[in-house]
Amino acid sequence: MRRAEPLYQVVESYIIELIDSGKLIAGDLIPAEQQLAVTLDVSQGTVKKAIDNLVWQKRLYRHQGKGTYVSRIDFNNSLFRFFSYGDEKGQEVRIHKETTTRKLKPGTAKICKQLEVPAGTMLLHIERVGYVNNELPVLMEDSWWIADVVPGLENEEIHIPDLLYALVVDKYRLPIIRAEETLTAEGCDKTTATVLEIKPGTPVVVLKRTTYTTGNRVVEIRTTKGRADKFSYKTEIR
Image 1 (tube, rainbow, N blue to C red):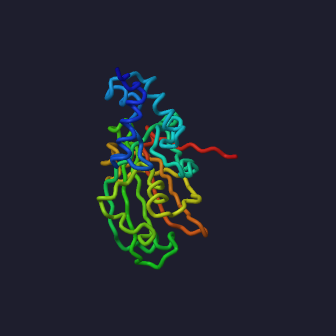
Image 2: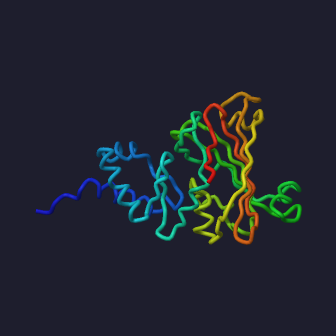
Image 3: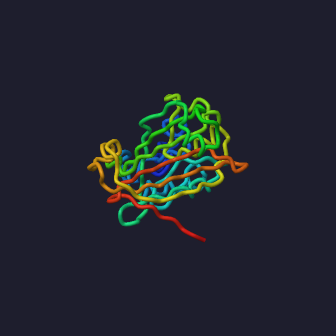
């Protein structure tokens, strides 16, 4: 009589199927451990063992406090050092991002100057909203890319994972080397207020990022606005 498959292997198979079928790609958050336990009717301990095995196999990458992401055997996990958000208490938190807008458009003089390209250069504009527990919007992300370095990414058939840089490295072979960030605060505008479900003028944390590839070339200009009551920025200086 054939032995039943161990429960942790059932969980492993389920996660691998999500990856192999393309439902999850490199850089995507996998479902939370509690959610997997309920879906597959197993204990969270069983789920943890399965995830530990897949992390060891380098199919997944666990970022403590933020969740577990689809990885690749040859992935440079230093990409995950760009994760820096937390909750209002400064504790790391799992934030799932949904792409709300992506389109090609000529860049403004200011953005083009920051990207070190001629004014009016065609750029890719991406807007994303970050949610806690898949329901509470806590941040709004506004990102501008030189379109030529990520050709076709404006196509909505291309899934943008939670970790956008994973897609950039994986699909476009574009190394993300470093980023410079500036943290400020301001009263939010009406558009941001509507998305984040707060009143216009409410204080928001504003994080401005300039992202570089090899040769010290700027490839992305990003502005992230987060709810001050549900969002924090944490860094470590060594």
